[in-house]
Image (cartoon, rainbow, N blue to C red; front, side):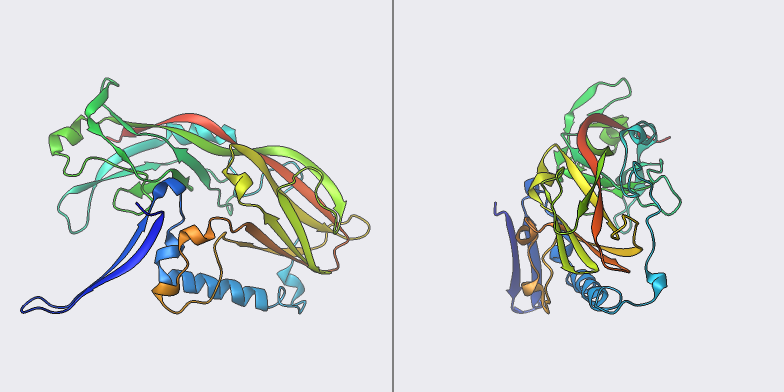
Length: 326
C-alpha cells in the first residue's frame, strides 16, 4: 500500500462499451492526511485564490486600509480562544451522543449516522472544534455485551466535532465502517457503538510579554516572524502538534507603552499553497505533512512588543458511547 497515490485510468471505446476515465486517489489513513484539499481541485483553487487575494489586499498587502478593518481582542487574558474546547465540556457532549439509521438517497437502504446534540462553542459567534484520535470501535447489544460477530473497520484515526456534530457513513470524514452488507437483523441488535478516544482539550497556561524580534521563553515550538513594522507571522511547527501534550500560542501586538494595538488576523491551513491548473498539479496531502500552522497578523500601528498567551493542550483519554436513538 503506498502512502499516497493519485492516478488516472483511461480506456478506449470497444464495440458497445463507451470510452471511460477513472480518477483514483489512494491514501494510507494511518498518517491522518487531510484529503479534502488533495482531491478537490476547485476547492483547493478557491482556497488558494482567497488566501492570496487577502494577503495582497488591504490591510495585509501594504496599505493600511480602513480603520474599521482592525479590532482589539475581545478575549480576556486567561480565557480560552473561541475554537478551543475545555475538558469540562466533554461530559455534556458525551451525554448527547447517539446513532441512528437514516435513509440513504438513491440506495434504498438505511445508512448509519452518528452525532451529538451538544454545542461546544461558548459564545454565539464562536466556532469551537474538538479533535479526537479514535481507537477501535465495538458494537454492543442491549445488555452492554460486545457483539463479537460484528467487527467494525477503523478508517480514520481522527474525528473532528463541531457544534451539534453529525456524520453519515457515506461521508469521507466518517471514522469507521460496519461490515459491508450487514443484514437488517444484525443492525437491529446494535444498541451502542463504543470507542476509546483521545480528546484534544485546552486549558490556560501562562502569559508573557516580549520585545519584537525576541523569541518566546515559554514555547520553543512557535516562531515569531516580523516582516514589516506592522506585519507579524506566528508560525507553529507541525511536529510538536503530533505529541500528546503541547502549547499553543496566541500573539497580541502591543505598542511601546505596552498598550494593545488594534489588529487583524488570518489563519492559514497547514497545506502547500501554490497555483495549480489541473488535478495532476494538485499537491498530495503527504506533501503538506510538514507545512506549519500560520497565523498572519497585521497591526494598525508599528508593533514594539508582543503579549504571548500560552495555552496547554493535552490528549485526554475518554470512552465514547453512541447509543441508539429511539
